[in-house]
Length: 219
Image 1 (cartoon, rainbow, N blue to C red):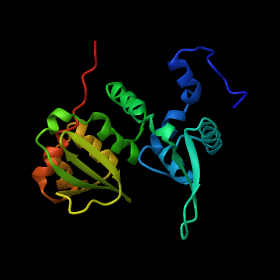
Image 2 (image 1 turned 60 degrees about the vertical axis):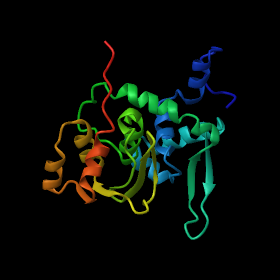
Image 3 (image 1 turned 90 degrees about the vertical axis):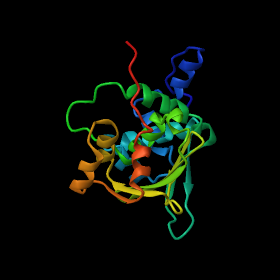
């Protein structure tokens, strides 16, 4: 990266932006926060990003020690991209930006929300104080993607994969989950239409949905 652009500023903010300040770079990091992905998976999560620019950003992030490539063991034997330990240190930065941006207006048009974005929004907006008395596990099935979520001792842990003996299973899509959580769509309406289904404890799900309030913007 000898020829990379730089702000030429000794401030830590400027030096961080020298590494991840290019357009799309932090969104690539966002897509890898929940685990490794193939190039095609990254493309699916960033549909407005061209393959050439994605390849360039991945190269830059590799050179910066933020992303690394790995070949999966057979029978998959495909190459995936994943965050390094240095790259994983960006999680609170990305979540903090997500929380700050959650009060900003939506873009024009039919901009959607991806699966990883919806799940990371849970981590972004989780309110530990509201979860003080909650101890439960959940399985979130968002299309073909499955995540396990555990709330205990005022903490939320989310990871890819199925949950063992969850209190409830929620099956829906990212847009419906977002509408129920933050855009005043009643849970009963989403269930009645078939856009959301619950297996297990509905009260546990209702309690879960109360743990992610939108922050108030400063004026």
